[in-house]
Amino acid sequence: MDTQSAASFAELRRILADFPGPDQESATRAAEREGHLTKPTGALARLEEIASWLATWQGRHPAAVNHPRVAVFAGNHGVADLGVSAYPKEVTQQMVLNFQAGGAAINQLCKNADADLRVYEMCLDQPTKDFTQGPALSEEEAARAMAYGMICVEPGIDLLCVGEMGIANTTSASAIAAAMFGGAGADWAGPGTGIKGAQLTRKAEVIDQGLARHRARFNDGLEIMRCLGGHELAAIAGAVMAARIARVPVLLDGFASTAAASVLLKSHPGALDHCLVAHCSAEPGHRRLLTAIGKAPLLDLGMRLGEASGAALAIPIVRAAALCHSGMATFAEAGVSNKE
Image (cartoon, rainbow, N blue to C red; front, side):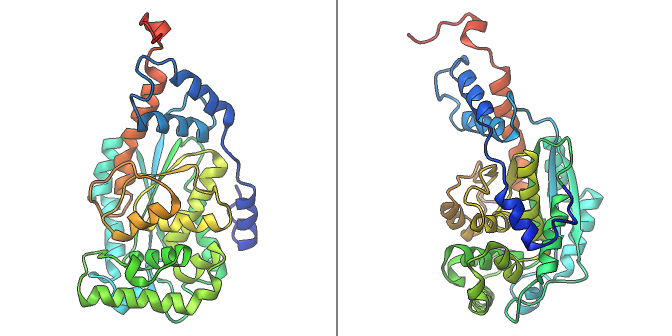
């Protein structure tokens, strides 16, 4: 995919309109094999669903997870200066250096999952605009960030995990979720980096100010991203788009990643069918958001770290589902009597 030509909203909308659908042949083959494996029907429950989903969106049977990639996008937000976070925005750059040095949680989780980690810095010295005063991004900036996100989907990867790092991005994610699905700042704002009391109230107020300023744009997901989002959130949406075109299934991480991807639903109701949500964040808005988009998380461990940590943790589950489906013997192969 030519990411330069994708760097306009018009081209991004064209790509969304041309999204490929599920591979029904692979889905049928997965269903047929599932019915003959040496276990009672439905005994592996969600693992069976994951195996079918993987085959359907990889477009092959049997599906496999041999080359997973974890992509972490990092960006800074202008609203960080409004007192919505426990940390200054300089922490974004400092954490990127920690990722690169191998010292963060995501580094360890990628080792555990045998996954390739890539960290993408996005204009860290140029935070978005304060969305209470105007759009966070220009159309060109938002489109270029989405196009940049597309580059993480390289040939050979068979599962993409997307995550983020960016001080104040839960404020942006909350505003995006409210713009997409309704409600006020208080309905979506959570502790993020650990804020509470008056600072949490302030965060909700900032979200409400952004919603009031940009409400006329809420009929278009790309405009919602432009007005309320961030470089790293736009890149996540772009990565999800590129994965769909390349038939690479996606694991969304937590609240910010799910909110970022959700803007695509305005243009294409099935835009996230190739995505699973890896975990339910402890950020309270995430559970509400999952209900709104109709997705059940694979894990619910009370985590709220970001940096694709939940998605990386879920890779072995997806791999296990694929291996069980492809590696188990059928009743005939094992000489085991099937039910009457």
